[in-house]
Length: 197
Image 1 (spheres, rainbow, N blue to C red):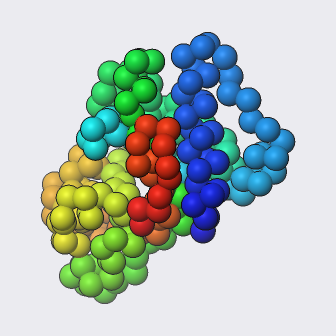
Image 2 (cartoon, helix red, strand yellow; image 1 turned 90 degrees about the vertical axis):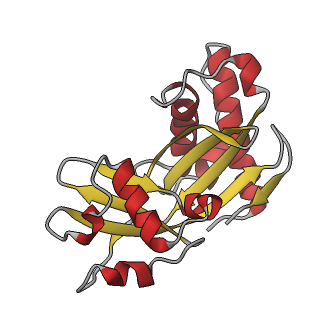
Image 3 (cartoon, rainbow, N blue to C red; image 1 turned 45 degrees about the vertical axis):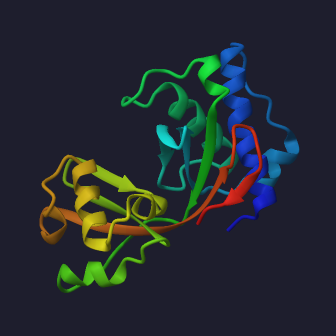
């Protein structure tokens, strides 16, 4: 999908977007960045403080050009994640940024729900449970970080969607989708970027 060098540029763009917000200005995106990252792709930005989640927002579908998705997701993760108060400038200095670029989520075709467990590759796939009125998405790195197996991963995606944990077994109640992600993260705030998954 992308290289570490490209991930560095995109994480810098995310950091610049949040910094610009504190100064009440729009982030400047060069023509080169706009051209280089013009393809539409699913993108999530995760903020962490002391290795703990501090915000995570993104777009699973390829709704925006990558550069635009990065800016929108970064601002939303910092200031609009309903699970956390808005980030302030001082706290931002101790936050690391992680970027996940996603393949298009596709509905998993199975004859029997137990097949989902065999088809989900922990450390490679993310999952989305799409119910009638709501959906829940978990990025590939979440299962690794939490030490979950595929069944727990599916159950937790149901929880994220606000559904009972065994809803993934019910073809009438939901679709199960999976996607791959390339994940890169800063090792320290504003520091070196490495490939996580």
